[in-house]
Image 1 (cartoon, rainbow, N blue to C red):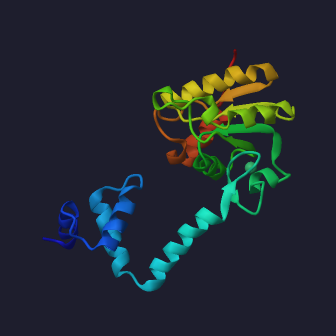
Image 2 (image 1 turned 90 degrees about the vertical axis):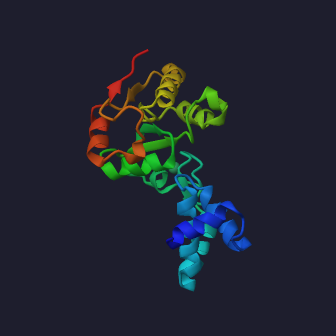
Length: 215
Ligand SMILES: [Zn+2]
């Protein structure tokens, strides 16, 4: 029996020492981590040199304490800076606004180097089945941003999923009154995929081939 199988076995019959059991359970709550990987990670850290474990603890504390959301676009920013790096960059095209679901989508689009406007992060998508409606997303702050009147084009870059498409359609209807150009990322992205996992070329093509949504 290898050590991971051994570690996993007592996991089912709670006989692991409590601190280790707690660590395994903490890892299990993370996305994409099953019981076996959780046990593997916990044992790795138990055996790891002190600085490795300390570094992990400090990094975790720091992301919870030192980060916040940009007051304009809701991307992640240092808690000490009310505006993120992109919103504070005056060389960016402030007439173009790209609307995404999550902060990781901003990173994916930035990696393409094909977009130089601003962003707005919704922090989710409309999903009636999960009870997520417009008030649960950053839609009101988006409309307030639009009322300032500087934005001339909005790119709806929600994921090409059922919820992403429904959210894009809902936003299009909300934004029609502003008389601006509204575009949607081109259909080069696989349906049901996540922007954050798309490769740079595909994403770059989807961006440059974006199509206007008409009322
Ligand atoms: Zn920002």
